[in-house]
Image (cartoon, rainbow, N blue to C red; front, side, top):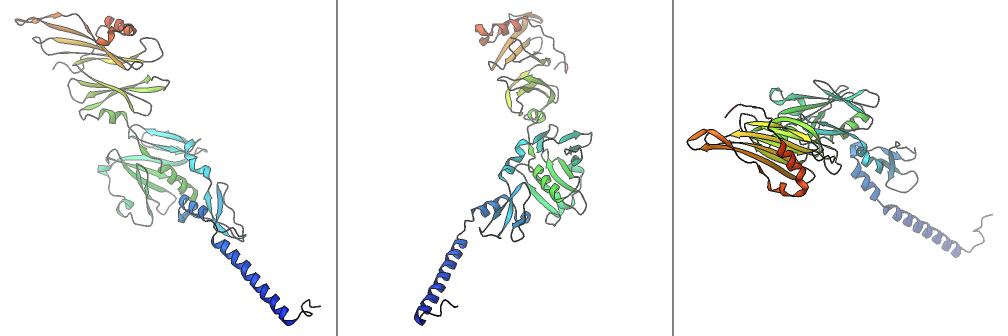
Length: 382
């Protein structure tokens, strides 16, 4: 039985109009809701990944993302498609990575935890957790190299420019199983090549991520090159104050015979904690010694020089205390007996730095007072 057959025609018409109007209203509300659906998640997704890396998810097929990603959809409707976005935890993934540091060429980079690096005479390899080489670093004199393919044809489809915070790479993805990234270091005098052992979708992504962590660092050599006349003499570990662990004592000498030397103390990040210059044709190599037995190292050194038998000679003994951030010294002068007797030098009473008058520095005064010069004639007279 048709439920509408007993209704009058005008009532039937009214019901039909109401039914159509209701359908239109509900449809309009639904469309409006869809049109105004929040798109903030998609905008965030576009910030996190490049369009070329976008992987679709959801849809009628219910496509799933990997364990490290989540599906972000534009519309809330069932069956809508979205894109896979790395989970927030992945943004800090490199925070747990290890750091490889190269003092010779002045750079460092991060690589995954549980991996390791092996240094050979001509290369450094980065091995994965299985011990398999993931990438290899080699170096060459830029002056004797020709221009690489991607160096000449950067716009070629097989080439990619990867801009890091400090070091930029040109990557040649080539056509084989390997890829090579190239960068200039050491003020453009050295070419660094990083070779990816096996080029796959996952390894390429990780390769880019590692390359993006490359950065320049201060080296011992660069510290000594602050003054172009200096060269690196030697380094030694030194215990720093405030439980900072081991730092480094660095000594710089002139490249050619002269009287200038510099003593630096660097922290574990290679930042200068202290530096001091001294002069003398003959010097006693700086020593690291805990003079007051408090677990904090002091630095001791001495130098000697003469201006000639008619002007006299001097010997200077130094201590630097990290604990007090003070330098102490004792100076011994030998002067001619008279202008007519230049060859007759007479020793003068020692002169101590004024800060050694303080009672708390008595142990340093006693140490310097007992020292005898043990320097070596490194360059000879003059």
